[in-house]
Length: 318
Image 1 (cartoon, rainbow, N blue to C red):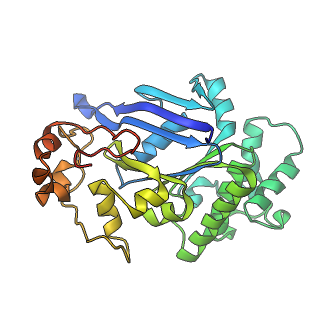
Image 2 (cartoon, rainbow, N blue to C red; image 1 turned 135 degrees about the horizontal axis):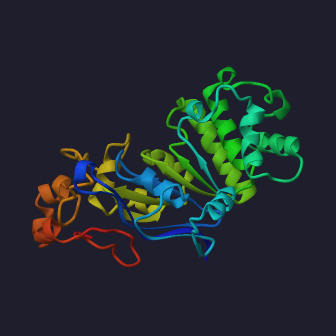
Image 3 (tube, rainbow, N blue to C red; image 1 turned 90 degrees about the vertical axis):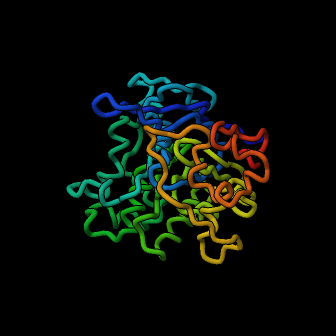
């Protein structure tokens, strides 16, 4: 059984409303694990809470309640402990252009983490190794370049090298290829797969792209309005989806064998989450009468579904 490296248990994150308004429940009772050497994809629409969850897993946002644990120990939120944790868990942001200081050379951008953490050893050798691992070879050729002199794919590789230079056990990548051309996306995905194989890296990939999840992940967790509604091995979730929301997301992909399922309306406001299943107002199964035929329609509207034990699906129909 895979050793659990990172876990969230009953995690809640709420943000105060403006001018005394209701709090926004961005993350609302999430359980999630990432095993050693495992890649987990966290999938969902924009605004579902997946980026807030990722930031909480890195200690960048303190949960309202619940526990984040790394390597079996709950996070310590003192500045010194968080600094030590962030050597082992690194963030890769979506926009490489915005992530890199335009006045810093590639060398300085990658070396920044070493300097912040006062890492011992040969800085130049560590920077060269990280750039090589990220596919920028020979690394010395890139040392004195500036971000504007690089392609989009090269900039993303520099960002990845900046994460790798501290030799972390885990990377959290927030939409790591969303801003890249299709041909470059494939190269970056291949790089992430190679890094997992060569370094034994664990990864949490935050994305709205189910195709990316299929290509890179071992497991997938589907998030809707602050909760994980379905999770499991990627082959199971993406070939035999059971939650109506997962089925709807998959149905719009090219060549999907599922009948198209159009979701009406927008996700509810996190500050005004409806009672019952939070997906019920947009659920195709409820609209088509399938929930009524199954005798669970009333529960969908009034009772929040819990994940089915051993299955990872939170749905009254399931």
